[in-house]
Length: 255
Ligand SMILES: [Zn+2]
Image (cartoon, rainbow, N blue to C red; front, side):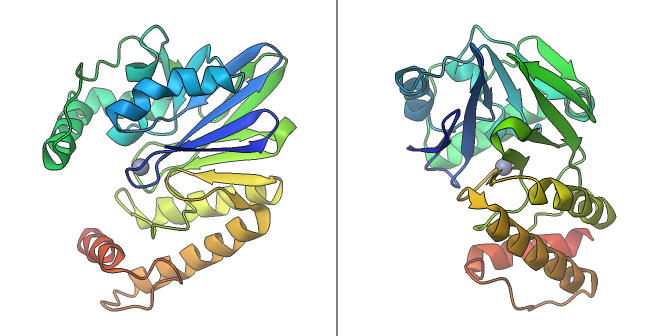
């Protein structure tokens, strides 16, 4: 697991699975963890790694209800998980789906866990809305289209924007919910990216404002080719692999 400090008050850890990012941030004497790493050894090492860097989370939140973002309580079982209201709705509509998907992925990768995923008592967060972290405020913005739920977390005081599974330098848009929703989310994210110094995607490398704006443009172009139904489009540089073509084929089948 890689750990990179992108601001005095922000530490990004990156899992070996899909470069999944978990973001620790602090303000005053409070800290929070957004999303999670995946592998048991990463989850076990996380509390010590964060504490060593001066981050001891008082709260957990997840950008959306896909299992690879929900594992924070496996590292911090004493903390409640905060989810945007659309994610809570999704969990109620698909009871046990996240746990099943996690089990399937674990089986595929031969991963054994000391304990199954228990989401415990989930705290419902207002989206759009805001929550407090110490003396500061985290803005929660809707980000659906990848899935039916999703929120982007903006920490203006430190120039940080966590977007969940959007604006990735390693993954093309995965359109699981709706092309129109996905487009609307990119349009909503654009001014937030403009106001940020660092953008952390759910998967991939944290980017500067300019890099994130370039990815956003590429993603808008990609959605155009998807809407036209092109079977073999040119995918953005750095994301033109067999795996990404597989994701494109799945997108085509869905839209
Ligand atoms: Zn993800």
